Image (cartoon, rainbow over all chains, first blue to last red; front, side, top):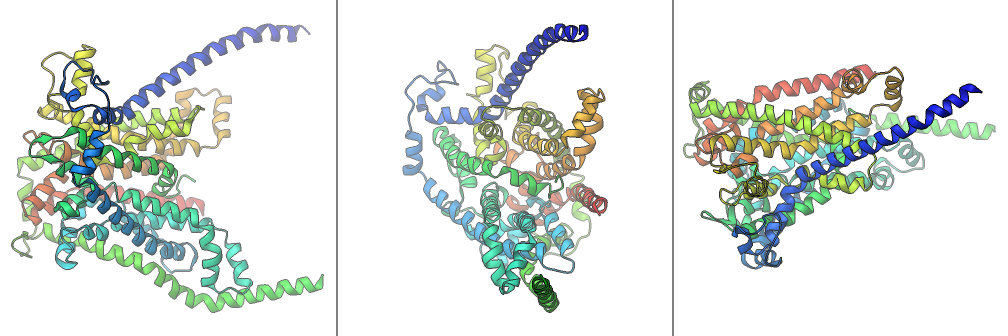
Length: 297
Length: 316
């Protein structure tokens, strides 16, 4: 009896103290969150603000750099499309990324299936070998690869050079990813289809592939977004403006001599940058799984 | 009853027969399906890699076609070059300090993302922008932030907060400040990835292990040191190898912000390889500049493989 009374008596102040501590923890949490948000997003906020500002606001020392004085507007975006080659570069980027996506899927869906499901002697070693090539950075390859693509494939200085080059890093990654997806499709449903009289190809086409659609979409998104993260191959292989992709054209072509047209430049960086960041973010969990090779599971 | 058992046996028989019949066909089909991937890697990764090795041991230039074999002469001549030494130093120091910065910020970020927050998905999206936004494009924002005349960093910390005083740094024009400018961008770009990797590790730890530690009276740092780190070490390690590979091999930050200047203060090996091999047309020397990195990367690859195989043997 006295024990319960004591317990009740003790519990109250303890709970209140905990409440105070919780409040403090919560406050610290939001402080940390604010710090991280500012660190991560400030450059993007500043890009956005600078591109929406009137040109004169950018160089007027009386204007707060984080805010604006003259009205904001979308002129820089308009100029981007009307006075620069931005739409051509955007089209080139879309063509390159689209072709890379096609090649990557055409190679990785059958390859991933075979490595995950068929008895391929030495298959595990092949899979690891392919994944390891992802850890060879482009910087070791760009000189000979450029020679190869220019002299042997005869694609120098065209966007097709990039279509050939980018699968060197999308294939290893996406193959590994597809393999993981196919391994997670239950073997039983495929065998059920075989028992029901399908041959292997029909079982794959009507049972396995439809179940793997989310995996295929994920691999496709990565082929697309990874090919938009490249800089070195585009820098080395494509120099003519009409063939360039956004990543290289915006930093080089929009600067004429020593004059930086910051408004247009930042508009050109922000528009595709934010779109890619947005798509990428949706599929990030799979990216982590692909990198860690499922080791954390 | 007997009928179903018989049916089941018949099905099992058919399956077994089908399997046996499939075996050789399956091997052939398997190789056929993997071969495009293997072929692509062999022709466009493995072959260029050995070509790079050969280039670095020859005196090939863009103008002269394939030159003769010169042994280690290229390597011997570049290690006597002071710009090369500076580039090697910078490559290593940028990577080393950037990894520390990313680890510190990344661990904080991981614990932040572990908390229950309203709208966490959206917040995470914003926090990961540095990593998900294509780097060449984000770098233009940084270049504008480091602008010699209108640098927003100088305006905010100098003109508005009065923490910095005149003369303000010319971020990309000063040997010391440009070094820090590059380092800052490297950390900014990479810390969300570090955070996501640490988070992937943390969420893979069974909750009862943490609860047991708490019951046994372990505080935060004890739990972190003796339980969390050993458990998530494999994931951290793979994230680290991956990140080191890409930081060491990245040309984008330096190429767009400083091109290695001022006066080679931010020169790194990838930029040097590009300057010599592509701009200067000396393929041999460019290949040698880049391949100096290979022993380092190879060490990473071997550690990665050991990790992978240790895990599979433990599982079996």
